[in-house]
Amino acid sequence: MTVTAEIAAVEQLHQAAQARLGIAAAYLALSEWKSVNALEAEESSAGWILTSIRIIVAVRKLSRQLAINYYQLVRGLETGSTLGAPPGSTGNVTLGTLRKNFRDLALDVAALPSPLSHSDDPDIRWFEEQLKSRDLPEAQTPGRLIRLDDAEVDPLIQDLLDVEDSSTNSEPVTIDEFDWEEAMTRDEIDEEYRELLRKHARDAAKKARALRSSTELSPDQVITQIEKSHAAAGSVGSGTVDAAGMEGGRQVIDTALRSDRKVKMIARGTSSNPCAFCAMLASRGFVFTGATSGVGDSEDFTVSQDIKLYHVNCHCFPIVKFTTTSQLPELNAYFKQQWPIVTKGNSGLDALNAWRRWIYAKRKNNPDAPHGARDNKPKT
Image (cartoon, rainbow, N blue to C red):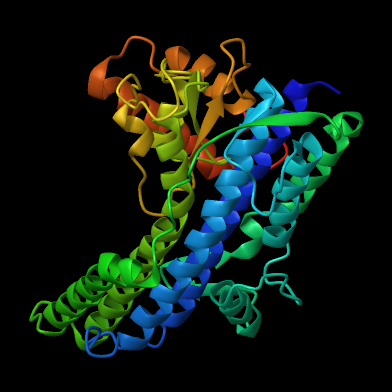
């Protein structure tokens, strides 16, 4: 098997595992939202906010380490050197070490909710216990359904095992010195997100009270509209928790990109069933360029701001390449091929609208496409 095939499998597994973490975060946050009173959302949201903060703390840790393990592995495979010493390493590092670090954490994510925790981190153990304690296999409000199975990781782990070249496990990997960005502390996360979550509950209550005061709706219509509004608020709130957790992985990659001289190209990595906006960014292919000077010098690095645009419930992650001959991932290549066809004769907003209609039709015909699906091309 070729290194190219292995890197492609690593990219797909990383994307799917990060998506599973985000979905797990949203799953717990949406489950907890049921305890929030629609008409007194701000007053009754203390438990939801506390739980959401703890979810963000745990998921950010997992997302961050998964992203570091991904980055170190693909860099090692493509260049023979990695960025920073892997956790727990002493002295020499091999490709086998990098493979094991990435695969082991991906296996832990795939097992969520795991019957047995392998982590000695109390926040991660709490997160796993919360997932296990939920009675339902899915979290649901009238506005949203979240299933952990929507991000299936196990088949992609097998795909990776099928293409790994175990004969190279003993090959040494050079370590380029680098200090990865420190993870946010619990206090920093609390300060960053508590007021945002409180404001979300406050706004939800205002909408519910406005509906209750309506003179244009019947009592039954008022109840129905309040329930819909509260469910929609729960969906957005769970998406906020999802995004805050995923930001842990995105931030460390963004920091590395700004100082790693070996980065050559970056593309937008999406789920198998992305929204129109994310599919548009993926269709641009390799449009980002890497730093040209040494590690630690970020002035020569140019990154399109698009790579930082993530919406609520978005599970996109950057795909990092360290050679200019790297092959564009299959899904990106597919969208790149389709863009001129779908938008032919249109430009600007008209092109975007044509693309949006096309993507909407694809998603409507294939609504259950899971994140990280093995056959990741949209149905034609």
